Image (cartoon, rainbow, N blue to C red; front, side, top):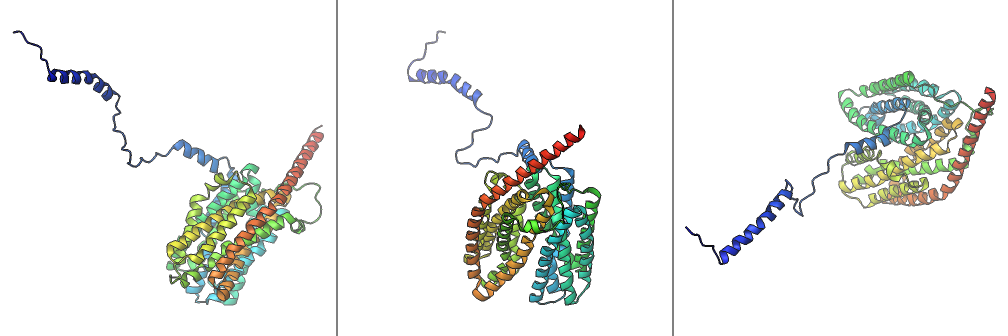
Length: 468
């Protein structure tokens, strides 16, 4: 049968469809298996790049010697077990039922003892070595800790708190100097920052552990703290050798604090550090503002935990962000952040607002710690490192006394709003002072590097001549 060709509109439609079929087939072959993401849908999270994480870890913690990690571990263990030191005020109030003013006096004496102990501790570290200072003071510190938990005499508690502070203060300059000794010059700030991070990580764990031990048996606070002191001391005794650099042959006379006190550039730095940390330590007066705003005094623990969380989460990331800035600029920014954070307390009236103020001044604390570590490393001659650390170590413990004491007086007589406005103003003054002190520090660092290079060349020359 003869079939006639179809004509008309139907034929044209089928021809059009037939002509488009190859185009559709090519489009289907080139179309991805998954449909494209709608324009307004959220982008899926990027998977964690193990290679990038590995590079960050190497930059942060890689290449450091084993001796540093033993020191770091001892620091973490020691701070994790510092349950009695952290909970001492609560213990004196709730277990011994001493009044608030006496409790403040005990804690203040502990801070004064730590500041005073840092001075002879630096001399011991430079004259006889780091190990005698660290090992010789840790054992009596543990025994004093046990005695503090066993006595209920107010006079004895005052004396023991002062002695404990002195013994702990003697250890600090030698410990920090040991870290600087064993780490290469380019890695020292990174190593000190890691140690500061471990200190805060241990403090957070100690706060949780202290509450548990206090509910079981308060004496466990002091027994645990003493035992941990002995354990960390044993680790240092077994794993960390003497690290003190050899003294220059030309040095004669007694090893004292005179050269440190005559170093005006360094002493200006210590004074500015003392005032900067005094700003940070006024956070102990935050409960007065909380109560004035109708909040429970226990809310202080809820807002101050922001400080610990931010330091643990951000302190290891911060060095890479500020490495390109000059130290005086970082220090100026740190006290501005601290001043703004405390100044905002005058405007805060809710728990979330107080937490925000803590976040702001914590950023200032983190920047201050990082820049201070870099400056103290640069300004300390290798043969006087312990003494420089001892004098510098006087600042933070001194601020632990000055901040609460002066802050409490201002708050009591002039009001908390005046206190926070004053801290904000002090931050601006210290920012200008740090910027002004920067050029002198730069010149001082250049002189120290020139002198160190000259000693190195002289020493190598003597070795060559001796080999002939």
